[in-house]
Length: 314
Image 1 (cartoon, rainbow, N blue to C red):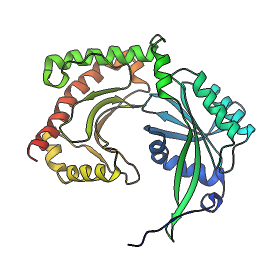
Image 2: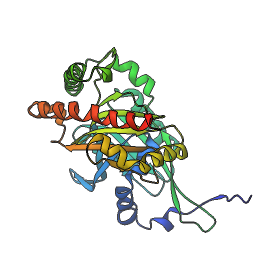
Image 3: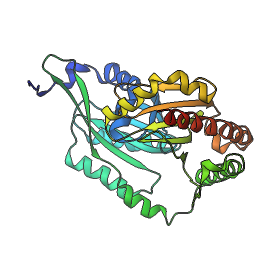
Image 4: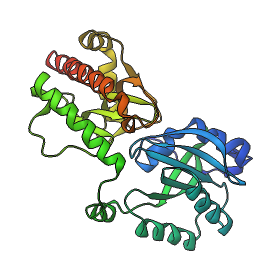
């Protein structure tokens, strides 16, 4: 068997200009960054104005339900960009996730990011990401994101136990609590003996599909119910997803309507989902909670039931 070797490609050969080439590419390929960071994200705009500066990219960290900012360089880190990053973090509302992408990180800059992660509370996450471009033989160049600085989640969780819940966390707890009460009455088999109501954007349910979980969740401007397939292995995820895709008509008939089958080849995880458009930060808009709870209460049992029926039929 012949096995190829990875070869580094100069970044300027792939993206000659940072603003004109790399930033638009990342705007269109945000999932690749999300996979590297281990979060689900949306990037909404490039060259976002913050005071007299221009932030490369701004979006939403859907996993933690907060604003996300990205500053990128296709060269080594420098003090100027570190200062800009801090300026942007202070100038964008609800920032919780901060990402600095560069060709290489000077040790003092990596240490600065570690310091920020150690001295901020659990609502703030700062990532340093080293960017490479590689190819095998004559193949197309491909990006590699190497996370060189990231939050210590264990320390963040420990600090969180001493911090009173904020407005958003209380809103999630109230919303999910009321929804669970309704599901206990309407579909008691779904809920089981839950010990705690979540204070995050995600409410999970068991799934009969192996290596998958059903989530009810809030995005930035939509609510979703989704089958989240993640075995830890991209090939296995694709295999599970492919088997479901072959039975799409059967599953949609069991659910009672169309579903979105997300098959992005460059992502490890795969999803099947349905969504409802909502106002931004809908969990903080009490006027829509009744409608949203009714939608979740209707969709979740049908969604879970459709996949249970498919699993029983093999």
